[in-house]
Length: 288
Image (tube, rainbow, N blue to C red; front, side, top):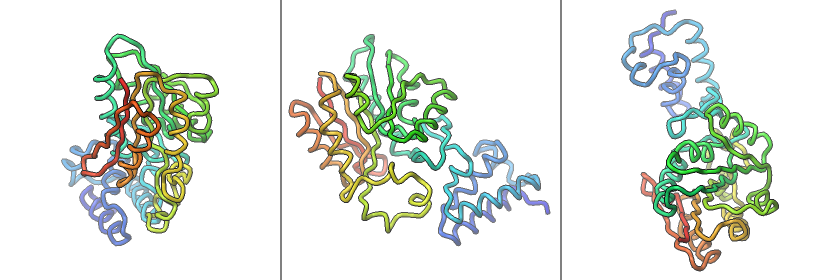
């Protein structure tokens, strides 16, 4: 059976819509299987999909329809223009976290003069997306980057990504900032995307997320703020006099986390930053 690119995409789109899944997964998966860019895929709509590829494509789309994230089927997710390996042990990197890094880098340039060396930490690193991106994007300053995660399996994924992408990172296994506190390490920059979903939200979430991404990286206690509370106790122990802290937060949590930071650092500035969709998804705190 000869199936064209157009027909394969049309089948996948209908199949996924019927099962209330993201219809764009078909395009993402077919691009991966054929090894082409988005523009190449759409320029080759009449091209016949090889029979073996068509069968693999159908199987992958059926898996996705049953709830498996397309990123787990492919094994990678693009983040900040780079491909990161992902699996069931790490949170799939999301666009909101790209914005956390973008605005973090912007503030770093304002806060820290060029020439000096800086020390940054990514807490709850997961796939290593924040740590690796921070290291590779900060090209005009010497930046030592540390990454911490409580999960040994997550750290293995992060270490693999750092090696593949050529980012020199120091990895520590441990709970939040404890590895740094134990070593007496002081840092200038801390970025984190901690678990912030309230436990009660679990019932309304897609099983694609709940059943296939690590619970440890998703839920932040009854109200979603458990990890932030612990951060507020530990951050003053590790931050240098001049510092930058950046958190990703759940929509609607911005003001609460900002106030927590103001309480933890009375002489620091703190602000809520809205993402491209107009949601309060980032909070930054700094002291000059």
